[in-house]
Amino acid sequence: MLILAIDTALEACAAAVLDTDAGELLARESQLMKRGHAEALMPMIARVMQRASLAFASLDRIAVTVGPGSFTGLRVGISAARGLALAAKRPAVGLTTLSAYAAGVVGQSGTAPVISAIDARHDHVYFQIVAGDGSQLVRPCVAAIDAAIAASQFGAPHLVGNAANILADRWPKEGPQPVAVDAQPAPDISWIAWLGAAANPDTNPARPFYLKAPDAKPAAQTPLAARAATS
Image (cartoon, rainbow, N blue to C red):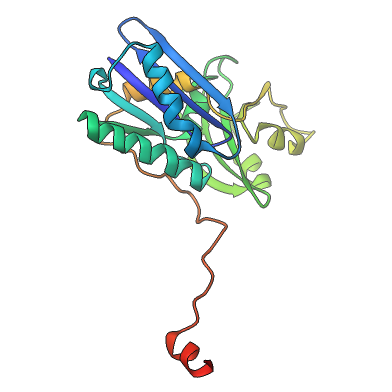
């Protein structure tokens, strides 16, 4: 199976092509960035496909991160994945950034639970907790940092994500301390590709996975009648 993986959810723009039969990435590229995903993504995808010596029609599916993450970044990646999937007549699958973070470290610290955490700002984090074997313990959610720490009742954890250091800095000194802290600005694109290969397109659609409303809200519009009365 040939998978094109895309990630623009957080502070990176990344793309890769995975050949599951060969068990390797044929090409990959990743650039750290907080803005500019829209301009960077399509040229990056073109370069990755060229290095892999593949036409889009050769792909079996396209995998993309669907959140939590930047609302603007998510729209860029998901729109690209849907458009390419439609043009190539291939399915697009969506993977959460939290699961991609966890996939890269599950089992690294033995049976230690893994807490994936993403900065949601305003003293909150998006997080989920999985066991050392990858089974789910706490579903993805958004909570205050202290509440997220309190939700971990499964032993000393392995922290991963762009909010890993935020949790580590607030971790209670009297409790079991984290066994590892992996502060990563974005998930490894290779794990997004592998998760995409395993995902069921029917149950993992390429659509945004939002756990809270956007911080920026449209300005209130003055009713037409009121504007007319003051003009």
